[in-house]
Image 1 (spheres, rainbow, N blue to C red):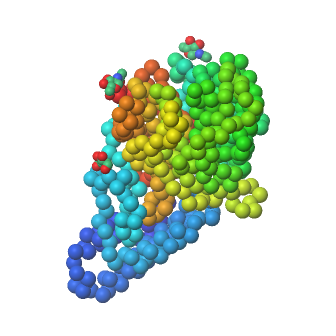
Image 2: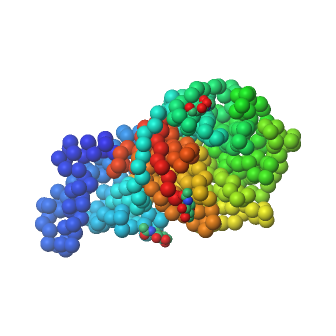
Image 3: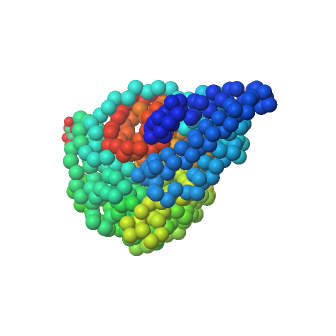
Length: 451
Ligand SMILES: *[C@@H]1O[C@H](CO)[C@@H](O)[C@H](O)[C@H]1NC(C)=O
Ligand SMILES: *[C@@H]1O[C@H](CO)[C@@H](O)[C@H](O)[C@H]1NC(C)=O
Ligand SMILES: *[C@@H]1O[C@H](CO)[C@@H](O)[C@H](O)[C@H]1NC(C)=O
């Protein structure tokens, strides 16, 4: 939006948003009292704003989005031009509840700042730690005691990492790296660990929006040796993955086209880094499919939290599988499996949240989740990042917002050591007033958690 503001200021001396708001406050005056000249001026101004908005949306290409912007962007611009005679007052984010925002209820002519979707949250004191050796988006992480293993991920849209970085929580240093197998996926992995072995399932192979692999590997963190495991029945992007009762469970994710949600759920018996069966077994399908959810085992129950349906897809015919944006819906749903092996639906998150597969830790019988992405802006359709820290109490099965991150960020990799909540990596926002994604970072932060 910096570009957008710059453009508006330069051409008009005053930002479109501010002037439109000023005009909105005059809206109490009945229309026939306004003189025609000023009405015409306003109309011209409004159309200019709408045009500039359209132009800015086209010019301001996110690296995660593509040049093929969805047609909805263009229809917004025209809605703006027609609809501006009846402006609504900008809602105050502190008095509104983002969970109550329903696209159908919002007048399509109103203007909502992106910050509207932030929830009230207490401040936390964050301390900056040594940055990861590389920036990373859609990477994965597993903590084993005081060592944090950080896998794969995009460095940028055209480059993916094929190694593991290690961080030592005891002395807060990055202590080295080692390679991943050449055949392993580079992002959208499913990962789980038993405290020594790390299982790495499926995921996207290569940069941009390339295809997924079904291949599955296991890492012995003591010897740093990799082994193959039986591949998944079919490939998945970012499936929910967890070890539960001696079996590696994999469910949901996106199918081979990167967009269609998969409902399938498979498991395979594993012990000490070895599959005890030759094939994956079908399990009770998950009520809602799709990628980028947190999958947590606690108190002998399996929880699947948040996520989305739909994702960017490769542009048809593109030799580099260029990512192009598609319709996505983000969810805050929570599902649970217990002895009955029937999915139970629990209280949803305080707001829809996706890209949280490695953004959680368990502390004091609670699941703590850092950041993510929420539903797109209902009017501008821009992506909106999440800056809250959520707590899911495993006794009461209820949610609360326990703090704010230093900025909004998605696909964080979270760890917990010695009373501190840590997070690193992901794609952060454009600033306090702009929750859209921009820079891919390797920054690491920690805060003393009191819950
Ligand atoms: C948001 O809505 C939920 C559910 O209706 C409610 O429990 C919560 O207190 C609300 N939060 C605020 C800040 O109004
Ligand atoms: C992590 O740091 C602690 C404290 O300095 C040290 O004792 C330990 O050996 C380190 N672990 C590794 C794997 O480097
Ligand atoms: C754990 O949570 C309980 C209930 O919220 C609280 O009373 C207790 O002080 C917490 N303990 C720690 C170590 O944070």
